[in-house]
Amino acid sequence: MISELRIGTRGSRLALIQTSMVVDAINSISEDFNISILEIKSEGDLKPNENVSQLGLGVFTSELEKAVLEHRVDLAVHSLKDLPTIETKGLKTIIALKRADPRDVLINKWSKPLLDIPDGARIGTSSPRREAQLKHGRPTLKYLPIRGNVETRVKKALGTDYDGVVLAAAGLERLGMINEVTEFFSTKVLTPAPGQGAIAIQFRAEDLDKFKALENLSDKSTVASVTAERSLSKAAGSGCMVPIGAYAEVNNDNLNLFATVTALDGSQSYRVEVTGSANDPEIAGKAAFFELLDQGAGQLIDSNNL
Image (cartoon, rainbow, N blue to C red; front, side):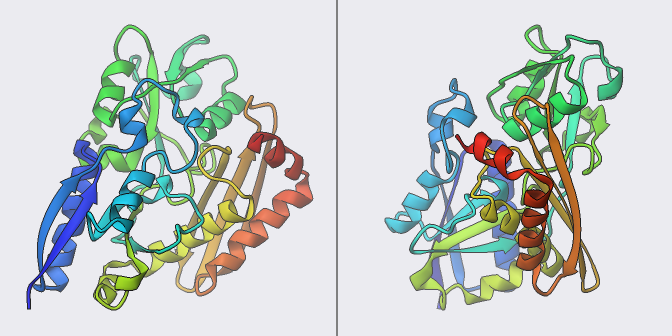
């Protein structure tokens, strides 16, 4: 029996591409759904001129979650890095598909790496994590907030008000714009946001049996990696507003997690690396958090949360 399946998504080209990827994946494992897509504006979309870091957690996800809970849609598709680490009551989250390139990248008008661009260059980013880590490595540059979808930010970066921009490789890759990239940052030079490059789908917890088959969309290594990263973020009580970077890799049953927390002004940075089991990734995330505390990062995390 064919069931109607309404999927909610933001309306940007990147969000629609990611949703199309999920639709194709669902159709590949089940012929039971007649799928329709509903575009929903997030708080971030409705406030295009405000700094994202001032809008709080869930700025790109809460309206989609609300649509699911109100039965206006059955599923929502998110960029995982935008989702708060504490599950919203009444919802179930599944990590869908294999993670894309998790790295951050630089695009600039000189086509030079970060270390070679001139002092005073104006680099666009609205991510506190990126800004903090960039200030730690290149304090002599100017970091300015930048808003808009990926295409808009790239255009702005090459215009008159900016000299460059830092973005996620995954979005550029999915948009077919990866050739614009000047530099791919090592995950140990500019450590990504927890879950960066991964896609999440949410549905009502009461529909778990109905959507049980969607668990087949998950990639085992991706799930283990992002679970470790988000476990660290959850332990720190943080979302995208605190400059925590985390990246985990899985090799067979082993998991290696690298994590950083950086002062907002770039003056201090703590780095840890832990190994654990891919079968229990949350333990690695918590271990990384406690190692950061042992190094003295606790006060920094608390001050960044204020």
